[in-house]
Length: 163
Image (tube, rainbow, N blue to C red; front, side, top):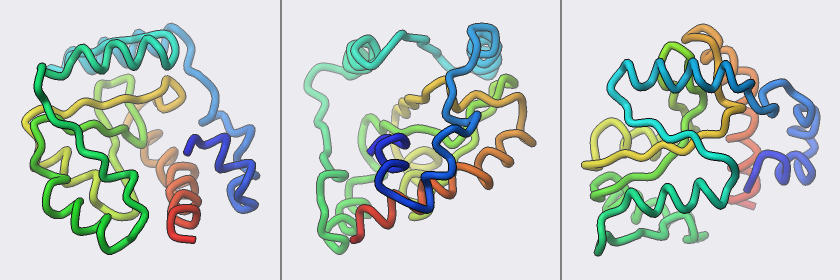
């Protein structure tokens, strides 16, 4: 679910609908974050829109790579089992971040903790997809965005998934 879709259906999240954290970053901030990430050894692709993002993303996977559909499993017990058994050891791990710093640092947080393990310990290749709305100046702003905004979205997603 997108944040905007959740905000329409979750009364607790609706108050964030016009948050600055939902707005795209300027081209200058995007360029700064790209440069910061590249300085820290990341390969960065800046794309325009979902279609181009999907094309770029699929071009990164090697032919024959398997794709897990863990997120489509709605049964909480089965979902958890899949996360533990295959969720942290794939060839490719696709995720997002809570914030992307102009200084090239990434901030990662989620309520379940499953996403963090795949980034830190599991996959041979980690691919991060993040909208420019996640760009912040530095670690301090990343913490602020995470605590004031991201946790609220994660809470809404949890309420939605485990209804």
